Length: 398
Ligand SMILES: Cc1cc2nc3c(=O)[nH]c(=O)nc-3n(C[C@H](O)[C@H](O)[C@H](O)COP(=O)(O)OP(=O)(O)OC[C@H]3O[C@@H](n4cnc5c(N)ncnc54)[C@H](O)[C@@H]3O)c2cc1C
Image (cartoon, rainbow, N blue to C red; front, side):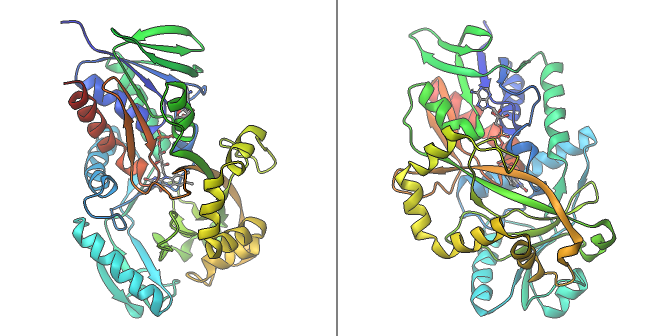
């Protein structure tokens, strides 16, 4: 029987996980990645946290695929000797309002089956993180850190070892379904496939439109800056220290995180990016900026989130305001101890009315599927998202 020919658009962690999963079901796989390396965008610019599944609505794709993703990720990193450390996480409340919200997160974590989570008081916060401050905290001992770029490279090696092809520097410009096949136009020409799975991250809405799908949900890029703590101060933090997130805002807030390479990072904040792939603060993409600011949904979203918008504007404009966010949790961090680190840009899917897609979103036909929203915990969940997508593709074509 002829092998199923599948094109995967995007060589981030999700595209590569999907390609590997397809190869396991004996498909003939070609990955198209427009950049010269894999993992060049969100996958290579994130916090490196393996989320345990605390925050997500029970029963949602995020909740189920995060938990399954952790199991698969642990097996993968063990088999490929990828740096991984179960350093644990505290989500710290500073006042009564946050204590109530933390109770809600605790209930979700229990419903999601997160192992070992428990609520702790001021004294125990000090036992786990002696330099942290707060009135109450949720402790998740199973939350971990990992080297996602190394994991992505290992996925790429696995794909090639199993006979898959990865075409670097090859941007897909169109996908069209015909009666017998699907044509993929790219920098390397036009090729015929049986199926296409697009995992294009920050460009996912554009790739979807180029294949005849709806323009919504639209990707709105939110940058997140990181600062790095001076090495002499890295002893201030043992693991991961997070604020209680604003329930109306999709991002987790400035956190203090250890990385597998021994750095301690502060961040990321969240502010509209003037370019979907502009990691340099001075680099502005006119096309992307007009696309975002000309989208009425974005302004509706901003109007509904004024307090978060004000907070994030302050952190975007002032390093002092940024560091103050982290100092609420670890007061020993001082402005002189930090230097600017990398920037990440999140692909957040937004509907026409400015509401956000909270869950992972997969759309498409029996032969062309699009991952249209895969924000955090997308890297944690990547291997489980891949399992889910391949099952979904098989179900739709059955
Ligand atoms: C600041 C930040 C912090 C985060 N922290 C965490 C965390 O700690 N833990 C966690 O689990 N998740 C985290 N995430 C989320 C996680 O990084 C993403 O969910 C995940 O990387 C998404 O992977 P992806 O493959 O979908 O996207 P990407 O990594 O963005 O990959 C998409 C790829 O598609 C390619 N592409 C786009 N268009 C085309 C085209 N036309 N032709 C060919 N190729 C194309 C791009 O070049 C890119 O390489 C974070 C994200 C950000 C931005």
